[in-house]
Image (cartoon, rainbow, N blue to C red; front, side):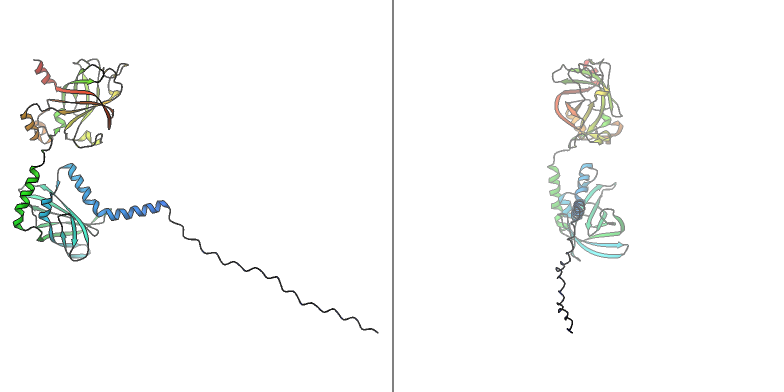
Length: 377
């Protein structure tokens, strides 16, 4: 019998298909930049911290220059105070003794440690013959406010407080400052005083100021607007800062009303503080349409005038005696209720808002009612 056929040789199993190599893991995405608002906040903080030391004296000096109650020292006075000062600080975290050189330029440099800062000084009169001097230093994170008294240009002993922090300073101790070595010797103080006297003598005299009280009362007012006939009024300036015309003038049937105040030369027009200024160099009156009679012809009897306008007047000093009295303070608020009253003033009328008069519209003049009656008599 034949043998059964042998099975066919089995073929080797085919290898499994090779899988493609796995891609490398993705790299982490770069960090997203901070939002623009955060960048602006950080930049603003850095700029503020870099300029905080220099902004303090500028701000204080500008306030002093405006109020004129206390004055920053002249360059010669700063030279008299410049030199090496020994500072004894009694702080909450312990006592320290430091040495600083105060330059006349307003810079402070530490001699014990490498540190810099700024300083400035103000003065004010006292009841005695001496003057009070306030020296302020900005060093590290400290603001030192020290006060002393001087008879001439120099003060050698100061004492005061130490504040820490720029945004919200807090009291952290007391201090005593002693002038150890002055830049200008005692024999050079005479030259400084002579130079200071020449500087002050060369300045023009301050303009005379007039208290608000000096304008209160009854007036005769003449307004001459362009394109119309002049018109006179009898007007009363009230102590509360309002005015209203009354009978007795050509515009007797018409009424002008509004508010008034004094204005100081060199101040921006339209500031809200006008209503409370105790004195100034000019009289300002704002004629309000809503407080005046209005017709098709115009407001207050002024032909062609249909909007509110302002009157700026300067007191008229008709004689050398009145000019000297004004410079001596006879019209100022320091004279009190016994001070002199302004007799006449003149100026111009302007159209526009109360804070931005944009063109001149006419002229105005005012005279006290009693002066007008005396002139007619």
